[in-house]
Length: 260
Image (tube, rainbow, N blue to C red; front, side, top):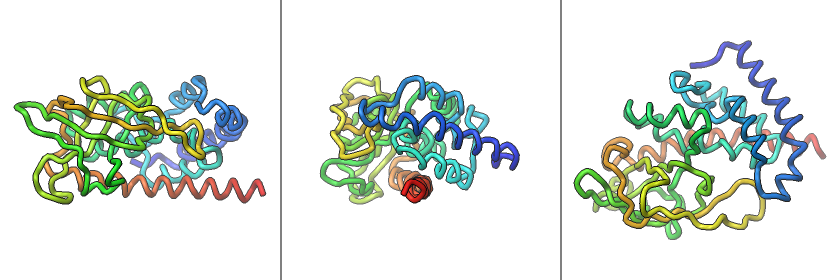
């Protein structure tokens, strides 16, 4: 539900001042330390940035896609590493749950994602197939009331601090997208290991790493949607994410022009 114009204008003004007065002065520190200061993360939580896109009934701000994009433009005017701190909670880490989750799944996870208590991440990309969600090789084999999850995900944003992952895995023998399903996978399940963060050329302070699943028992109750719907869920999540990232890029471009 869209905010009333006055409330939204106040939100934009608040975020604009937060970027200019709190974030931009710390860009050098973040670049050197390759980390976002804890007190800044706490301020982000207080501003509600972890729940921009999550419905008010779950503790979020419930912004529309247009409103979210306007916020993203403002956030693009500083290093994107700041936005990445909460970006997976707003976008790819939570939206599969928002779109396809049951009432019980949403009640369990969304309030904590919106508050920033839980960091959510999106585990699609794999070493051999990239981000082609119809070609994933990670497998989830049904075993009674659990699925046994095995495979490796690569370049996963916020993997180092995530509490829960949306994972795309192959549950059927069909090739392509029809055999792919989506799961909510808590980090504390057995058989999950996180690799060392990659050494990237830029965007210091935003970490990506491998996530390895070794016969991880995932309760069937944590599947998102029906078996075989993972490809559709991934496409819907990524479509929304592309709009958000494009808006961030507008803000980045405006910053570059202004600083020239």
